[in-house]
Image 1 (tube, chains in turn brown, yellow):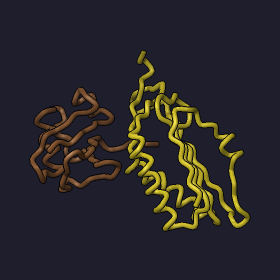
Image 2: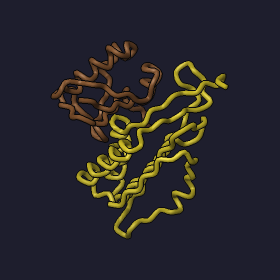
Image 3: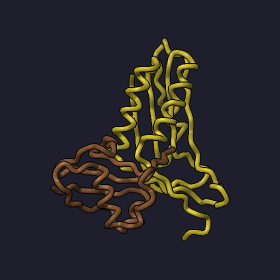
Image 4: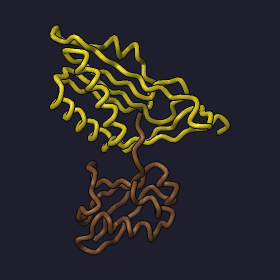
Length: 81
Length: 133
């Protein structure tokens, strides 16, 4: 299956892109997506603990199972205000 | 509870916002807060901060926070304005107003909103140094 991924904040600089797609096996979780992204974008490594993930507009836990076509956002801690 | 949310690159006109305040006769407290861009960020002198938002999620998360406020306090109205894009030093990047029957509730709800925003609302900032072009 394929999921669409967008990056925010300095993750765009770390990856060199604001959006990409990732092919994953059926039943893959958010954690597996992050592992795949870290393999493609080595500069993302090391920040996994604080990395936040959303599917659509809801935060997603690392064990959340992804579905074909999910719109996933990956970003560092938020800093509004 | 009336909920008004604005995420915009436009400067925050505090006087205009205050002039638009609406309170029913049972309300006794209007608390508002302005978050202003500071010049110094640690050792760095800034000319401003550039704010980026994942807008759809930011709006959704703000509304979840408003719903949580409504569960906890008898808030009549909440208004939030958050700027995006470049905000120069000494300008407001955030403006929040909470109207409730009593000051304790209004202060608590306002503080809750801001703390939750800082943890959950998808807005990021990048300091722009004084020396940047």
